[in-house]
Length: 352
Image 1: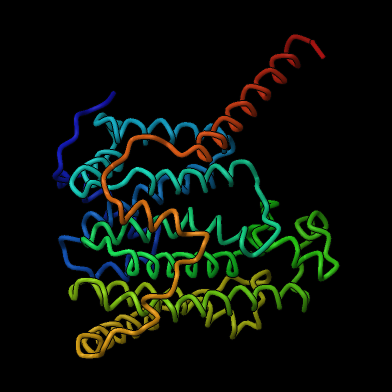
Image 2: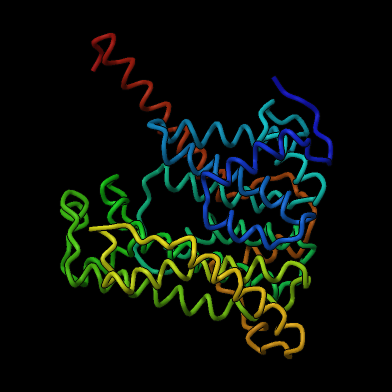
């Protein structure tokens, strides 16, 4: 069943999104408390849909089917007929109200399709291509919600997104390996003499693996620092919330450092009191940014991996057509699905 959308998020749908983020994304839930209400509510709708999409692919056995269903749900959102579910209705209202360029949620869908395809990445640039899609796309959408379509500010928001995703990858090396997933650059493993299949079969926090985690954290820290230059280009009321997201996620990297970069034996976690401290730091730094001159780092070129996101968000408009790259990966997944169905049918009928 589908419903026509309106630009206002229904109160019950908004309550559902708040609850979903309160339980499903603790870091963003904490940071969102510092956003002004006119940005916080649509941001919660955005994150609730992203959380739903991520869980659909991460937690479901039929990952290919999950991605294809998400494609259909996103098509319905942009056609004005979202599924009759709170998250879809809220996301549809948000996209209409803010004229969200479709290329941005499409980029997220492409990243999830890469996950469903069990894609691994040869280089750090490949990992950043993935990070651009599953994280920087969300950062660019947040800029749109804040009324910011300046290309330089968007580039720094995308820096922050890549940094956050690199932090997530560093934190989850062990958990991902148990799912036979690897997001560490394969060339790093090769340089260390580690066979990827042997690693996912028996992940161990060797010195070489911990050094790879450290490299990811150091790269993330570089991008966290660079992203700060863009916060001052945001509306004043939005700066504390974005600083908070930056500090809370970077804090995970700090915990990894204290753990000797061993993200296999245990999971890096930050405490409630640490988050409160970072929230306070964010408010103070936001006040200081109102009188400080803008950093020249604001004008640094975008990472090449995020340029398409900056272009899409700066251009504006919903733009209905999908990219050729996304069409290609979805077509590949559909072919995989047809092949699997044919194989299962053959098994049931005895055909080989």
